[in-house]
Amino acid sequence: MILLFLDNLKYNFKCLIRNLFLLTHIPILLTERNYSRKIKSLKCKEKINIIFLVNNNTKWNGDSLYKKLDANNYFYPVVLVIVPKNNDYIDNIHYQFFQKRGYRVFTVSCFNDIIKHKPDIIFFQEPWFTFKFKNNFSLLRLSKYSLCMYFHYSITPNIVFSEIWKKSKYFYKLLFKHFVYDQDCSNEFKYLGVNNTVITGHPILDVYSEPVKKSIWRNPQKYKIIYAPHHSFSNNSLKWATFEWNGKEILKKAIDNPDTEWIFKPHPWFRNFIVKYGIMKKQEIDDYFNSWEQIGQVYLEGDYFDIFRTSDLLITDCGGFLTQYLPTKNPVIHLISSNGEKRSSIGDKSSQNYYKANNMNELNNIFDMLVNKKEDPLKEKRLLDASKILLNSSDNIINELQKEIKP
Image (tube, rainbow, N blue to C red; front, side, top):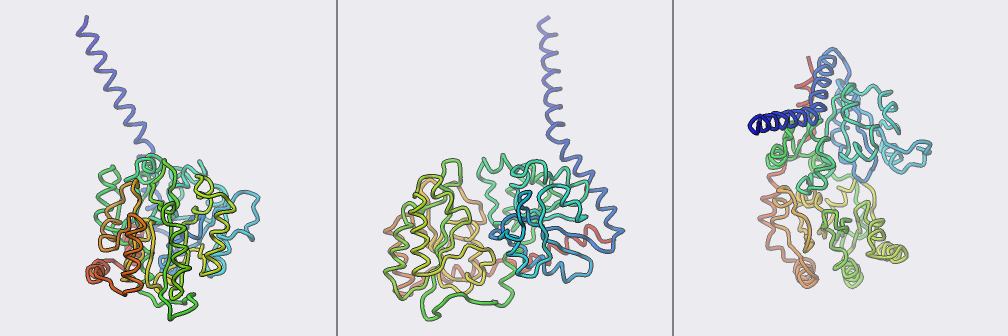
């Protein structure tokens, strides 16, 4: 009797495991079937409609890819900006950003709005759409109409942070193609069971193969510095933000060094999170921003690479900027949080020859060395790091698309 009970228990356990496996894999199997059908239909089309689904212009990083697709007679790219229902899109700053720059741009607020544009391929700006906007932008639903693709809005994917992975794992697993920066990044996703990655480099870096369009710095004779603080203050975050120990001191440093010119470029969520997590009160952070505007500039938009390329130094604790700034070949003071989450291998490699500041004493010494003494002992090693970066990601992505869908 005991043996029979154990056999039944073992059988029921196996059934449970099998059912759990099917439950978690059914969405993947369904999207794969949808993608297979879509590819067959695309091979008969003369023009492929490509949608860039975005909601924040400050995270826009597809300019090079959009323009190269637009120049190719086989593709028809469109930017769709997500806005709340009943919102006046004319006043939407994200819509205006794309309109002023000559993009083919429309607004959407729900699933049906997207389908009206007859998408063949959709590039998502970020994984958060899939739970932030609930079922409106579900990959499973959209896979019936289009091939869902993604390249990271930040070069560093941050999947090492478990909370982010829990929220976004099915987004990554349901993609048709997932374009990643390098082999290490691909390996990180494969370790987590994501097998749709394609190594292409990152489109955001293609700008470095193009000429600088303009410089907004006011005095070319001064040493030009960007201060770009991160927003992750909460315990349930990456905890990279170091503003509490250096934010006011860096502003004071800008005031006390009149031979320097500064641009303050905070993360898009920085201002709200400063208040939300009790770092400063609203009036305090307003005064802080006003102080930067009086002695320099505050830059809150996307399309910031001309600022990078015409600067002399970046001071930051942001993860993505560690690689985005590397092709400038200029030094970076990398601000380190004592309790920050582990960064990906991409950020580690990019920043290995940056100057690390764990406290104000180290920051002051590094600043004095770079800015006042004009010494940069890590320069040669940093130039070698920069020489390894791919600057043709858009071409690589387009080649992959054509390989998949051209007859």
